[in-house]
Length: 357
Image (cartoon, rainbow, N blue to C red; front, side, top):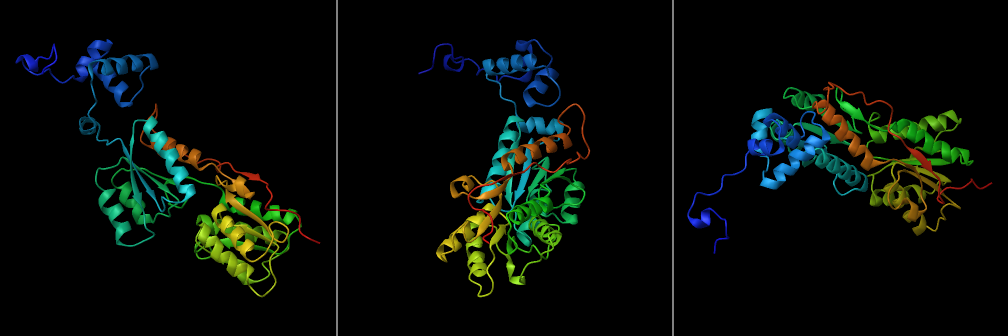
């Protein structure tokens, strides 16, 4: 049964779909202003934007992203390439990116990027090369020059959050300084037998995040007139709880001299190390002090001393930079300066203590 007032129900012509001109007329603005207010592109006074949005809601107007794309050449979609989606740090960054993009009126397309191989090539040569995204945010990924060039040729700006990419805007910690600070904290507590659980390929890739943290450890030890007691005191592992557990058993179960302190490349590695120490009957911090990096949500519960960063805020900053690259604002910025390193702070808890005499 047709509702009263339904033209189609009375045999009349169906009611026309609201158009942008209807919104403009109701709000008392031009079509161009109404379009800018609803798409978020260009400056519109806050009160005018509210009036246009209220008019659109009143008549049921929904902006067509496809139509807007034809006019602007933009998809209002940002591609995010990320190596892991099931690890705490990357999940936090992704949440920050998603919230910031939604606020800006953008969609997100996520690509889980493998280290190398045909699957990775398809992401750059097929998916990102087509007009599916306006720009790319790479999280914790080392991008090759030809991958940057491929996106550059198609006018798709790239922002790197961590990782490396020559010629791209980059936001990152000073990982070398972070590695130094973590090691210096243990040195200041009187430890001299300090080991390091490093990320995978840290020695082979000195410019990577894990490579820079390893170099920070070595520089702090060298500045103190020390060196790792044994080559086995730098153990590379996956930057995960299981990776830290396996590496911890290898390090602590070695028949040679045992370290009194360990700098772990991430908090998750530190958690695994703490579990390995417990299984081997080694008390933390009485027999072994441990420091990590990240500020993981479980760090306080585990009593872990860590160098805390803010991954969700880093995701928001990456979006801010990518929007500047796209000219979302008064002036387009061709290559925003990444500026000072991202903020960190040392949070001391019960997993570190003074070295035993």
